Each structure stands twice: as C-alpha cells, then as structure tokens.
Figure (cartoon, rainbow, N blue to C red):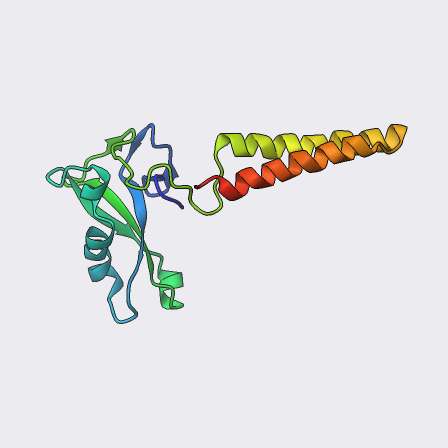
Length: 157
C-alpha cells in the first residue's frame, strides 16, 4: 500500500467509487491504544486539509493490522474519507509532496531507459554469441548503462 492508493475494504482503482484514499503513514507509541489513537494521530500527522481536502466534507481515517500491531509494529496507514460516510470518486487532493519520488519508484523516462538498457544487453549478447565479440558494441552498452544509472541516481533532484 502506498500514497494515493484507494480503498474500499481492499485496494481499488481511484477512478471508480471508493471509501478512502491513502495520504501517508505515521507511527504510534507502544502505550497508545490502536483503535482510539489511530484516527486522531492521522488527523494531526497527515492532515487531510494539507492535501486540499475541505475539512467540512472530509475527515482523517486510518487502517492498522492486528497481527503486526501485536508483534510491536505500530505503523498506521493514514487515509481520508467523507465525513458523511459517502463514497469518493476520482482524485480529490493535491499532494504537498507532488513530484517527490518515493523510494523504489521511478518515472516513465527512467523506466524506459532501464528497459532499453536491458534490451541492449540482450542484443549485444546475442550478437557476441552469433558473430563474435565486438568491443564497440560492449562499450556502447556500458555507456548506455551508465546514463541509465545516472538517471536513477538523480531522478528525485
């Protein structure tokens, strides 16, 4: 589960009707009761108003899991839901961290470069097997790989 995912008792498409949208995550202390503390903590730490949601229409919500909670992992998924319990549809918010890449994510151009680099490796390897090694092809592939690596390292700056 990640920011901007939509929930309706399970993960669903944000284009259709859904009950909640994930805004972020927080952690509760070990002494805090899960049921009583999760929604207020999300309201403070990941306030829906900070994401462009009208406080008179939307309120903070939360999801926790009993198994990990009992094991000592007190992370809370912070969501937003309609005050009246109605369903939401489409994207309703502005992310204050819009454009900031989350760890493990890549944008479209970086993904494309990764695919091209792997495709190039397959082609150069097939050429080497079929016709023999060519230093210039391997040099070109290394340069492509370094460019792709540079894109991955600098994508969030």
